[in-house]
Length: 421
Picture (cartoon, rainbow, N blue to C red):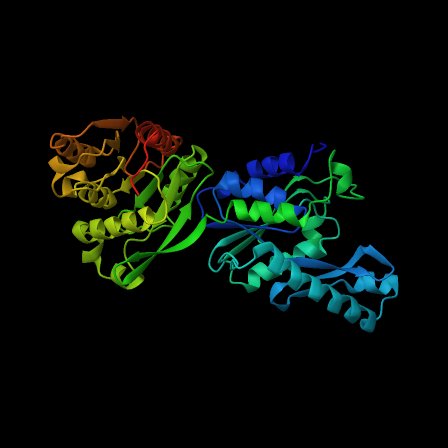
């Protein structure tokens, strides 16, 4: 297969990584050529994009031949076999490394500007390049991710040698490639267009996603951790209220959020309780407290973005979402409840936001409670039963159906709206 360009290669690679959708993923592109590929992967998975700044250590008289690589954090990988074959001394290696260290620092400043690196600790990190030849640069990037506290490291490229697993050893937990030919003389031969990527293009990709990432939402004296994603020309922002025992890392809610992002909707995945508060189970079921935090997060969003806001609530989070929407002047554009407990919400008749209740057909008790709660709603509302689904919508295709219903409901009720301010 010949890739048309890095954009097509990135989209094909993203399809191979679909099993990581909805996980707590960060995508790191290797500048410069790996960044356009990584951008397609990050967009498809709904994950934040950053760079792993790595510099190849080229043989002094043949700089295209890599004898090692260096990366941020003092990481260094050296291929002694190449050094021996090229008759490179340790002193010559040191001279090359000193020069490349200066360039590495310059590029890190240029690519990110004043933005800090995306946090990778405890997360799945996907290291992406436009291809692997010797593997020294990719190994350095994987080691950088490991040193930064990544829980799992995945190396993903459009093309790599058939024996790359043996070459890379255990530097990555998983290797993913679109093509693994038995003969690979150069990466460029696998691309119809292998035009060099410029620094400005790398900066453009990173700037495009700068509005996405980790945020600290102010709620009174507290700061709540969240993940904000804003697609270009978003028509609104959906705030997620998680259920008991869940968090902003919930794979189910992250899956739904990614689908909303692809439909042009922004999302804020938010922990409504601090880690200490979660230790007290009474707080998890305190819908009044959760609703107050949701209201505070809504104010925080409106101070920064002039877009309609909706709520997506799961389990007890649905009660918090409806309670917050019932507050006078809340001006919430729409509410969606997934397997929710709207019966626990206060003042259901005061909710004015159009409300969609989604329940699994085999979730008998919750379905009964939703029907009772629906009878109290005075706003535009609808109850949709997903046939054959249980409470967590774990059946094949069930969660995707939930995401499709939510996309349609939010888009229908947000398109054309403009919030005050």
